[in-house]
Length: 400
Image (cartoon, rainbow, N blue to C red; front, top):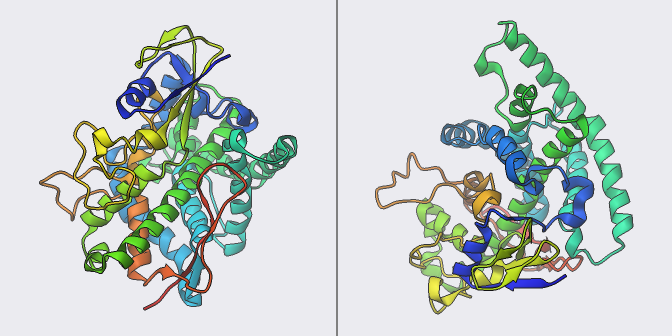
């Protein structure tokens, strides 16, 4: 077995688009990830993705950012504002988890801090499945922990959520419930199409657990890195400080720049389903692993300029590339929630009043408007339990 590394932007871009390379980054986390969307390939992947993308339409994003998002964010942020302080990682997990639960289809009927904390504990354990390939501890012990979390999630959250949707779908079929009364989430869509795309209870439960994980676990680290970069830049460039709160297009551009520098995973793993020729000229066999170095590709000076390794919110839009690089992937395995997290890319004629910003930008806006700043007495701590470059803790002060 050979391990082949792809690092240049163009070569990485073409490699990620190759249809004969399947997802391989999460092979070790099969206990949760084996049959979920991110690990499927070919027709099975297309069929399930076509169903789930019905949730992620443009009208959904506008409705979500204007109707669902503000209420959930206010509920999550309120206790931290009362305290005048927060750990950005803890707050981010709670905010992203609650937001993700809304579109994945996980009900929180109590909506209490205790209920949030319980689901958060489960989510953090699910996160260990996604990073099992980079974990530094006892992997069998981690798998046992994940199994226990899956059982708790199934009984406490998933089964009640599924039962409520089953009742609503039955009432809709009988004409006693309108389309507008049905939940707009992934679980509802999968249940509506179970006749042509049947899934076992176990697979359906893990699919929703995966969406809860993918939407929250990756976005929280994106949020923390972005806020850190903003704090550092604001201190070093005070002339830009006000723009972060007043100019939403500048703030979104700043978020995208951080996304480029800090992809949620430093690499994308692929395995060939048949012998292939890679864009760089090499050959790969089914037993080989192709590792796409996203950190290097997103810092390609030929695409992003001579200072590509540095954070610069004023960076000109790269030609032939997105401002966040390859952080959300390309091809069939590109992140299905890209627009939800990052928003739409602005154009010269973008109307800020109608623009879709993405949840990370909107959370950053509210934090900055609440006077968020690093706690000088408690510096942030880097997570050393994985080779991924994430923050374990990032204390903030809130209030003017």
